[in-house]
Image 1 (cartoon, rainbow, N blue to C red):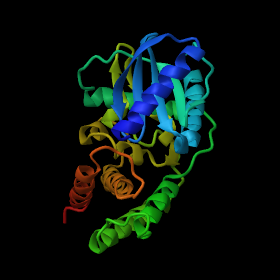
Image 2: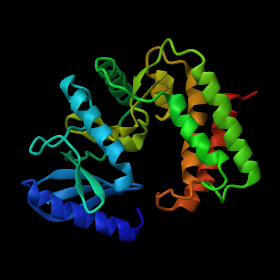
Image 3: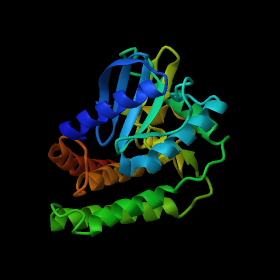
Image 4: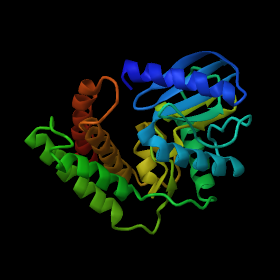
Length: 280
């Protein structure tokens, strides 16, 4: 969100929260990209707020969280004081969550892997319709291949991203026997270190695919502690993840702050990940 939109999002949350029985004297921005996370004071809730266009994603995230809480998954939980649903105010989709005070230290690779193993086990215990990884790749490809949707992407970078996305998606989609429900983007920014232990957030990215796709978002050391990981596939999934990230940044409608820097960084990371996946 750009500053004017973020300011409107904060105003929408401050107006909606009291109607739900939550006292809000201040809303502190914890994180923002295309959405925002706000710590509401003094009620202690965490509000996740997104533009109206993300309403379906926000509703999906609430449903994922509701089901995972039942099976004890290591995830952030919805605020129990309000109904587990998305609240709409002034063209923003608002969901309310439990706020966890961060410990500040980085989650150790072994603990990260244990949390991901537990999360994957919990995900296998719920029944939820979710897109396959290859469906998400297809969405990214549509952005890359349509010059009107990504007008600033050069011809050479467009070809590079398109071929990378297509080839890696085809490889991952060949054998789906071991696929399961995944977090979708369990990178370090989506893992909180709390007094309850590591907890995953940002659950709207849930999808189906190989566990290597999730491991491709985590630091490399995490995969070494994850029992049964296919390290070659993890490296290829890491390249795929960066290619998808890069594709989103080149969208005309992308709302991530500092987009120009991330456009260049994304392409560089794709090339580095491909070199790592195929060192020969």
